[in-house]
Length: 427
Image (cartoon, rainbow, N blue to C red):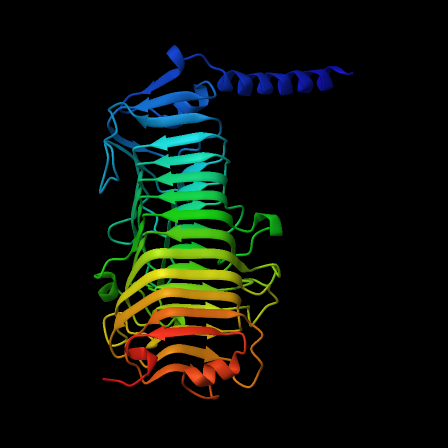
């Protein structure tokens, strides 16, 4: 080996030692203190893996990138329960992601994150086993924010968090979104306020089939928007949307507000299979249960698309909506909308509506089915459905109206309707 090669090798060794020293740098009792005016990122870099980094109250500028196992939290105790505004430790930046979690086993507790660039994300999670506990994400109060949390890591818990002002004019924005590697995601007791969609899964193609969003639970959360956003021209679509997801359970949530941006019909819940960019023919929505939820303020209830009509996809399968109350559904209200309670296109298979109540006005159709003239191979259960009196309780696009027409069109349909909509006579 010549001198130059030896020198290069020694330089590489020195760089490796510097990285190793940063990973195992000593700290007192596994705790690293960050005082006002110092750097949180420097504390991450010099801490032991598994250390706790405590941060004094104050505002800290700059992007942070947790790249190894650490816990970051305020020095003061974190109050129990979901926060409703700024906490004592505020992290701000003008970068693409204020907090980008790339390492494993990162716990963020009681932090408030902001970003002055509207097109940015507040939290970007790509590392495995991340926990956001009682954290806050606040979009720019004037210009909004593109996304609150991008949850694309394997195994993530989001508990008692508050995400707000994630909205934009002329562009989609979400409080929470996952599309590439979202696995084993649990979201509990959180407030998620997003413009186009409060929460969304899919919307961009994953890099491979095994990175399709899967095994997700959302419980006791509020998915909402601000009423004032309608006057600001914010792009508003729905409260909850899935385009590509497997094994999802949503329960005991409140879902509010929808709109007609980009041709949507102001359905608060949108379940539409989409191979978004044409590179993911495995896209699907399957094994989904939504139950015990309150849904309000829309021009319709649910938009369902069984398969992508533009790009090859799988067929939606085994989706159940159970014990859900839809209130203040009115296409003449602030949300506008279609006036259809349930729009069904490109037949899903094994779809169940059970224990559904709709309260609203100015509605034209209960179940509006697109696909007349073709046999309906799908298995569907419509049980204990209570809808208001409408012009057409069931209507097949250009192919008949009424429950009898729907039963004739769907030989495997199991139907039980109660309430005014059972006859379809408008008041």
